[in-house]
Length: 263
Image (cartoon, rainbow, N blue to C red; front, side):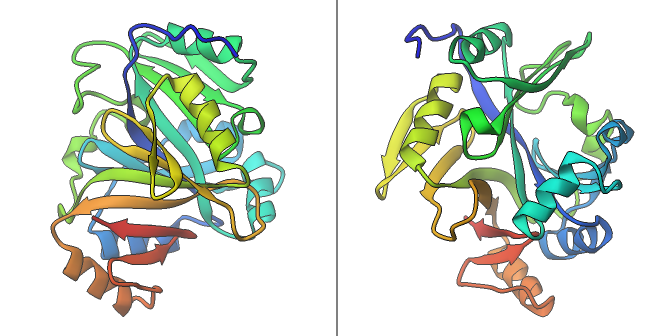
């Protein structure tokens, strides 16, 4: 691996994607339990045999995608994981070119990429990175690098759908790996972000969130398995989750195949 990092380097968590068999049941749960509202549906994902919805959380987003064709990659992934679960960690960078050069120098393949006048997209191959899909994107145009700036995947009107304001941001994501240290080291090499140790596991520090790499204890493949959401309404959210029959702990519950922890 090369030791030459891109410069300058800043990276923030902007979006998390989840994969589910169908959208309607989860739309209802995300609205009722987390107080979110749909801010965008992107017809472009039909190219991949999918449909989607996005929810805004502060300046970040949770996306749910569901296959509409049995022969698409999303459908095959659902079959492998046996139900809904985590899918992608999507980051915003600026500028993009050093990250593309970094991935290439490390031998990390690109699954999908494109560039327009407003957006540069790079989705990395999970067989090379481990963990889950890692996406590094750059928003272009006025105010593009501001934390609350535009985000093309969420459309132009996402600020008009703030929901109830029960959750304020995505503070962290948890990724279960057969070899957490190896996967974390690869992600750190690609992103050129600090790698820390917390309670014995590696943590990648982004500008606005942390990525925790945990041991995979279920015998399943590497996957995004949890999110930490910042909130001032923990009691309300947990009470609502319990009313909807979700499995709840003292500050966490299961939703869409992942663990949601309230912080």
